[in-house]
Length: 275
Image 1 (cartoon, rainbow, N blue to C red):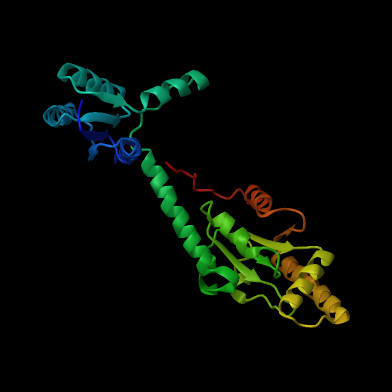
Image 2 (cartoon, rainbow, N blue to C red; image 1 turned 45 degrees about the vertical axis):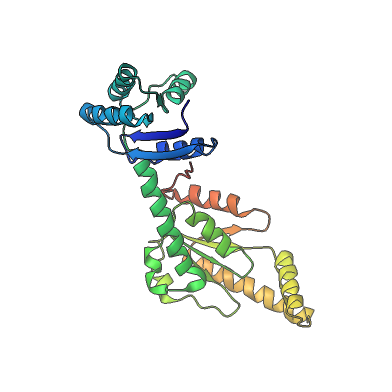
């Protein structure tokens, strides 16, 4: 028995997966432990050096190597040199193949695609934050989508939901006296646009709640008139822009987001991925 545990995490890519599994595993054991990551391992001579080092340091090898020839070489050489090794991907490959009847593509480095998608998503979120509520009109032209809507129609939550899917979204508020700026008018027909609306009763209730939260007295007649004018102005703007109009009264952000992405066939660049 050994009072020390040394794991070599070997990969033909960056090796993060193997390292994370190694870390999660060794933490379960009260023993002195260390982990060494070997990345970009694509040649047999590299494998030979790693196994020789594993023999000298009495290390375990865990590996995520996609190419079956190199994976088999690691397994064979490990057995010959008396090194314990585990192929982390093979069992899952076998189960997926049994389930789907398909063969794996054996393409190394596909997680880099996920990394690229992650950075695309971060850029989309940053863009969306910077273009919330009409900010930075001069770069609205770089958006994948422009959302217009009255207060309380969930413009910002919807924008952030879509940003998390990798879409750069700009949103602009519509009030009772709003006149649409030229920067947005010039984008009609060039950038997809959506106008959000809500039924008058729901909007009235939201407005009343907002007034109460600020301890402002309610004048029902003036409030009714203001909400009606606000809705009228919104519809005038939406008609002028010829944008898709969506009633958000009953649908949640996710459902509205699905409607928008399907309608415009927007390119969702991100697949959510966590280890």
